[in-house]
Image 1: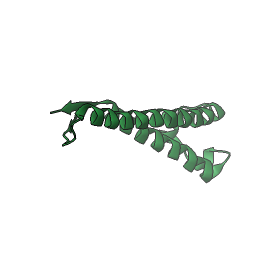
Image 2 (image 1 turned 90 degrees about the horizontal axis):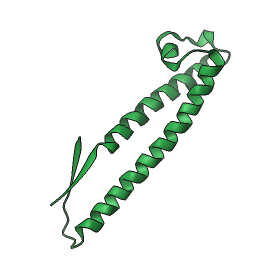
Image 3 (image 1 turned 180 degrees about the vertical axis):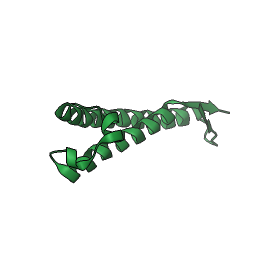
Image 4 (image 1 turned 90 degrees about the vertical axis):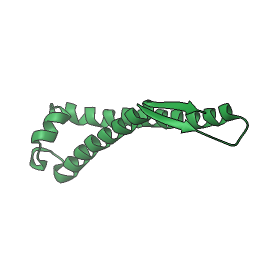
Length: 100
């Protein structure tokens, strides 16, 4: 869990909290959309080669792919992007807002 303490000299603390929470919610939405696009790209590659991304990550080499190095870099890049998106999404979803 991540606790985000919000303190302000502004008289409307709830409005400040709502503003911050709204920005975080927008980022969560953006991350989910990005994750959907990344999953689509990974699914296309998995379908094309009939292997999971996990198997590819553990055993794949560029020589096994029609697109060679470029396709290897694309696939590995999408895997890394997905990992980072999931990490960021989990962190933001854990935020608990605390006001004083």
